[in-house]
Length: 558
Image (cartoon, rainbow, N blue to C red; front, side, top):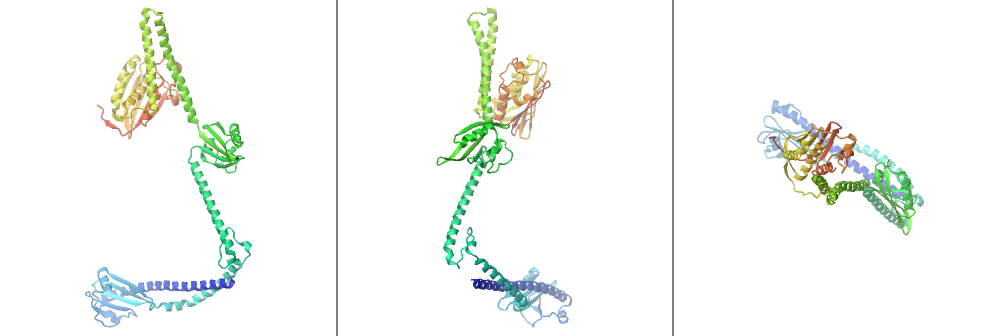
């Protein structure tokens, strides 16, 4: 075996050296051909300048060496030829035509038969004649003879290296069989007795590699799916050590940093209720709980993972139920507030009606009681209408038909309707700004402006003002309602758009209203894809700004 390895390496080395010598010769030949061609071009340029200066006498007074030089006139006839006198016509030859029309001609042709390179160059002179120069490069055989000594030395060194390499390789191959690489077996045809074993090992390794690939791919797919979930998911073993955990679980539980696999799940949250829930699941019971964290409420669902009736771990699902609880709280508050708001006018109407039906009212007080009943009925109808309007906005069941609405004209109409209310408190209501045509739902836009102006008048001061200003900026329409009324405390601005929320409940009872106006405004603005802001200082008034995203058509103010 050692001899076979040695022979193979020597053959490969010899072939490599021969190929190297051949390639090197070609490279050198190309190099010298390029150098020779450059020198020949320079010689041709010097000869051309001499011929232009001295004419035919230049060639008799100057040695041009072994170069073949031909001077050709404008018509392709030979003026001078350094090899022999000739009457050859160059007028249709490429070397003459390219030089005549393009200024020069170059050519290099290599002959494997003669191992030489023929170099040609033509140059057009200023008088229109052409200088043609040609030469033959030294043979490839001579170049090989010049470098054969270096090649022989290289061959000796390579032969020595081959002998050393053969010894090392043979020693490695002939190591005991217990040194075989069983994970990556290489089948050696020179050892047929080992082939069946190595084939089986190779097949087994391929199957294991494929199974590991499929396992990694399945794990990556599972991680990609769980990472895309907003809910948190945790998989643990029976000891509640983490096997898998997505970033949603870390975020929802308020943990710091990514958990390490093998660490206990209680590194994410160590509250008593969370521990009890997971211990119940590890014991084989389905468990659920609501975990209160600084960032909100989290619903935790833990289930044992069975296989063949044996618990192998726990799967934990975590969901953010903060909004759900908030909506439930708002629903209960809304129901309570609606019941209270409906009960008050109904109780009043029932009491006055009872007095009238029992004849306990003096004839002179009947009109007063009737007016009170009518006022409470109007309040009841207004409340119901507001609830219906708000419900439609919540369910997005408002008719989708939109039209072009002149907001300036609509604001003037609202101010006229609220004129009697403003006159009672000696409040000046006005409209200013630009005439902006907005494409939207007229009914909802009317509700927005009406409720903002109505609130400004209700909570305005005697002799104050309410101003509605229409303007626009790129891609937005602005509706600004400003007053100099009682104002809103800073801590209450964030809640004024809640249903039935009252800043000052004792004062609000004296003011006629349902407590739904600003909530209707907010939902109306959202319906049009806009935003609403409030700026207020107690005692100095309030300013509401509605931004509606559109491309408005602005009409000059008339």
